[in-house]
Length: 212
Ligand code: BEZ
Image 1: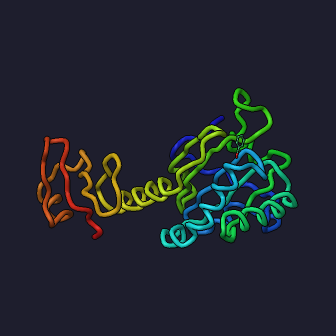
Image 2 (image 1 turned 90 degrees about the vertical axis):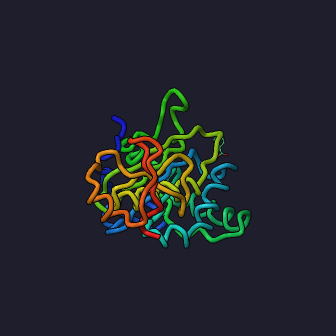
C-alpha cells in the first residue's frame, strides 16, 4: 500500500554505504529526504546524486538529512560514488541504502510493476522530525528531479508549521504568503501579522512572510 501524507514513515534496518543503518535512529530529530533512483551507474541518477551532494549546506541549514536508495548492493554504490564525485565535481556526503533484497522498496512502494518490475522509480519522501511523511513525489526514470523544488517545499513546510499561513504557487523565500482561511479573528490576525495584510478577496489575504 502506498504511503500517504501524514503517515509515519516506516522504520527499517538495512545495509547502506554507512554499513547497517537503522532508519529512525539515523534520522534522530532531523527532517529527512529519502529518495529512490532506478539503478547505480545510470546517467540521470548520477546527476541527481551529484546535485544533492552539492546542496549539502542548504539541507544542513534546514536541519535535513538526505539519504538515497536503489536495489544495488553497497559494494556497487561505493564504486559508483567514485564516478559521481569525479564527474559531478563533488563529494557524495550522504548514505545510499543498498536495498538488494528490496525490503525498503516494498515498505515504501518504490517498485511500480507497470513501469518496471525490477527497478525502483524516482520517488522522494520528505519526513518531519515526528517521522511523518510530509511530501511524496514520484517521477519517471527518464526525468531527473529538481532538488531546488524539494528545498522550496521544505521551506514552505517549516514556515507553515510555525505560522498560520500557507504559501502560494511558485512561492519563494521572501515572497508574500497567504493567511490560512480558518483564521478569521481580526485581533488575532493583527497580533500574528503586525505588518498588516491585503485582502484581494475575503478568502485570499496576502501578508509579508512573518519570519522575516
Ligand atoms: C538514469 O538514471 O539515467 C536512467 C535510469 C533508468 C532509465 C533511464 C534513465
